Amino acid sequence: MRILVTCDRYSGLPLDGLTLRIHHYAKYLSARHELDLVCLGDDTETNHEIEAFFRNVRRFPSPAPAIPGGRLSKLASGLNPATLYPHSPEVQVHLLECAGSGRYDLIWDAGCNMLFNLGALRKSVPLLADQVDDSFLRMRRELALAPSLYSKLWTLKQFALTWIFAFQHLRKAGAVLFVSQADADSFKRVMPSAHTVVVENGVDEAYFCPDSPSIPDNAPAAPEIVFEGSMFFAPNIDAVRYFVEAILPLVRKELPHARFTIVGRNPTAEVIALAGEGVEVTGSVPDIRPYLRRAGVFVCPMRSGAGIKNKILQAWAMGKAIVSTTAGVGSLKTEEGRNILIRDNPEEFAAAVIDLLCNPKRATRLGEAGRATIESHYTWAGKAGELEALMQQIVDQNHGPDRGTV
Image (cartoon, rainbow, N blue to C red):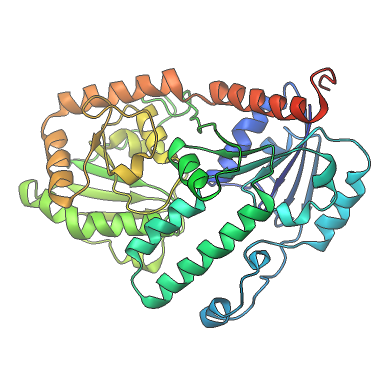
């Protein structure tokens, strides 16, 4: 197949959840198919590893926001979904030149943020709309936690804009792709005519391996609880605040020397302010594996957000015992008490953390089962095969099975 990959960001380093997905899938797909990348991004950075997976890479400057100004102007700006997504005249001209060439069998729009730029190409080439996670599920959770009237109104407006966008652009796509069944089901309830498909993320099980000799040994003296994620991302900020304010005091009441380490890039001032006795905020680190390996317990106290949690896949791959909320695990292949503990109130969450820190043999068994779950269900190679089969199905349905592949 000849596949055009479009994305609203360049896969620089470090990778985020979306570009991590592109990186690993492109690695496997490029061995059997021809891939081109059209994206928005800063020309000063180059990720040579990921560019090697593409025949051509075209980067264009990121356009200015459709609605400049403050919060009130955005709230009062009307119901045009185009205001939420980037419009790039340069990208549109480039893709218009591609429209009549017949050079692509499939468009893979990673993140579904470039659809307004596809123009006539959309009419001649089938679309895999990779939504990743479901915005409607995320916004329902945000609405429940919204701290102000403005936050509630803005979330409701985004919900309306996203519905209009989905009706216009996603309901007739070859497939709308999600990383979890919970996300696909949520989207399907709002847009029942859409063809939804699930291909979960994987994890690099060789890199995230507890026995890897390349991981520095920096084990702490005290029991350590670890959380990892991009610390400018609102659901992660809410998760660590919730843990520090509602759960950690209960843990430290029983285990006064217990430490909580927040690992992740670009922490906001709100996150940095959490640092103190028993709490460390690392900021960006060159390698998260040492922090995962030394953890007595990995926690995922998510209350908002959507999609699959790569942090859980990575901790499982590292053989770590995990305590999570229901919102944190989504539709992962969890088995309560075997490969994870799921707790949804502070008292029960704290009790589970304390139990694992005090019973390292149980924590080890939980972590070993998590590692086995990764090896059975969540390798990138296995998931890439599922994605490739889906892409081929969309192409065959559009052109007929006798056309073959390139």
